[in-house]
Amino acid sequence: MVLFEMDVVRFIQIYIVQLGMGIVVVFIGLLILKRSTKRLNQIFATFYLLVAAATITNVIYASLTIRWVVKALHVLTVILFWYATLYILVFCLIVYKSETVITVKRNNVIALIYFVLLLVMAPIAYLMDGITINETTDWKPVWNLAFAVYAFLLISVYIVIPLIYLLIKTYRTFEDDELKRRWKFFALGLFPYFLDLYLITFSNFINDPTFRLIYICVCFLTILWCNSSN
Image 1: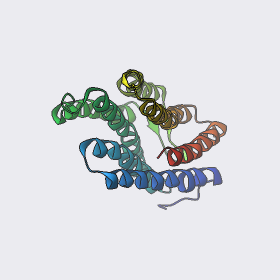
Image 2: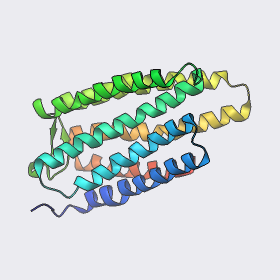
Image 3: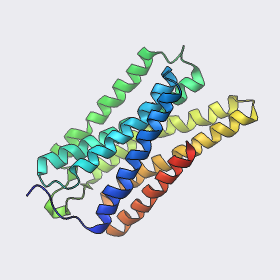
Image 4: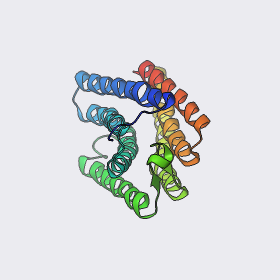
């Protein structure tokens, strides 16, 4: 059998919450590009479109039971979610330093280094049994300590810590109160997404049904927050 009957909680998580988030972020990404196709807008829109791609990939494999396909698509989903965050970092770098400093070449170097670090997830997932997703886990992803720690440290050190620094430094450069207000709103709008990624890591590591339910609720709030922030 290629398909299986999933429990109600997982159905809600995949086909209502996550699919809903995918639809929302596609709309946001296209709306940003519609406003303008300048480089800064392209970078910001890429973040949303990569999140959408990750969500769609997740929905595709959710009902499958072909082990190697499910595992490969889950790894791809994680990489896409994590890689999307790079474009928020680059966006903030450009706002803080300007496009003349953060050139396309420097942009590509930053992206390439992060992409290579993300690819390390694959050997951890396969050679170190970093991810288990099969009938024994009811086709829910379960991460071991090595994979969870690597995912946590990678996004924290490469993205979150530098991003927090940039958000604060940029805020302090603004003299206009309206710009400060918008930047603060922008920063607060990012919080649910990164919280979501940390909760994914913890949820997949502890593999607790109650915590997975909490995670679904947070995902739903993330959708509402993304809607109100744009």
